[in-house]
Amino acid sequence: MRRNDFLAEHFQLTRRYFLKAGIAASALGTVRADDKPTAPPAAQAPDTKQEPKPGKRAKPEKAGARGEPYFTPTEDFRDVSRGKPVPHSLPEEKRREVGLTRDTWRLEVLSDPDNRAKLGEELTKADGTALDFAALLKLGEKHAVRFAKVMTCLNVGCPLGMGLWEGVPLREVVWLTKPRENLRRVFYYGYHNDDPKQMFRSSLPIGRVLEDPFDLPPVILCYKLNGQWLDPERGGPVRIVVPEAYGFKSIKWLTHVVLTNLAHANDTYAEQNNDVDSPLKTFAAALAPPDNVQAGKPIAVSGYAQVGISGLTKVEVSIEPADKPRPEGDPYFLTAPWVVAELLPAPTNWSALPDGKLPPHTHGFNVAGRPKSWPMRLTNAHWAAVLPGLPAGKYVFRCRSIDAQGRAQPMPRPFRKSGHATIESVTFTVS
Image 1: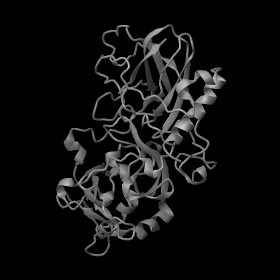
Image 2: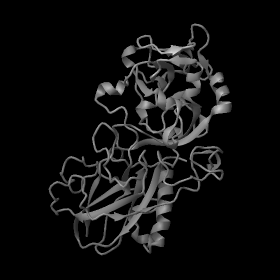
Image 3: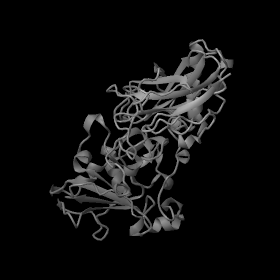
Image 4: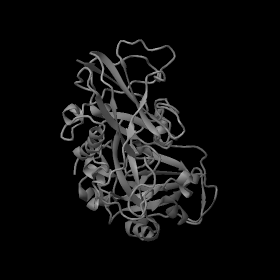
């Protein structure tokens, strides 16, 4: 199953919803299961009142709409890997030489020489104690966990893909070093062509590594994606995955974990004016915004929501005349005529997984393989709505999420450099 499976799943769900709502199949237009959705335009920045240009539509990757199954097949994840050359592009012989295959991988766990944490021992290649893949799997026999997570880049509007990630909690490896005191943070990095200038590093407070607040899954040393060994392009043989974080925290091609008494983050991304502590945001985006609308006919719209750390209670949609002046002091469209869309149920077949079923003991799912709550945090959900017909003219469609605290997108964090949450605006014509 490939990219169109997410759209097929989405449109199968929405088709049932629209038919139940009395919308004839011939009126569904862009929401038919065999159609590709119209790509929404680029999201409007929250601090501007500039209206979208009529008829101008951006590429899907600029607006958050992509076609993929609920769990994205490994080969269909978007790749934003760093490196010259990108490590996953190295020939297998070279990857074996530098420890990027399962049988040659070794992980060193060290005390930071500049800000020492007091450890009972370090795990190093020099003394033969570095953790190998077999030892990691041995830890996994007792401690392995798996959870669903959407992988999202901090400064890209659409998800890179969503997967079922499996591995060993990082804390189990930290405990192997017998830490004693002066341990405040963990930073880690992967292989980047033995070039210090290419090294990409992320960090976490030790408290987040040792325990899991708010029912979050643990930070893991990940070696499987969707039930299969993690391949080189996805960061294999082993990468970090931080459940609630953006992708820059989930370092690929992991080679080093450093335990430090440093009191602050030292992520590479911090040097590029990014908020390195922002967890995933909640936002809604359209997959089938209004298009080719006939006057007086009901308007079927649908899309998805990324469910961030703040959860999701509902999605709302609005339509306003394109020539209607926006009121002063309303950059987030709070006065728009918002109506509630329907959040659609969880999929019954989890495509891209073996037999379409979740393995037992998956975080957030019950013994029957169904989500314990829906929508699930850190994943995606579908939504749909039927809006009344309109007279001929030009209009603007918008959608937004409302989180579990009742806060409307783009709040509570409307700023750039801390994840996408802007409200997209789609201009369309009724004729």
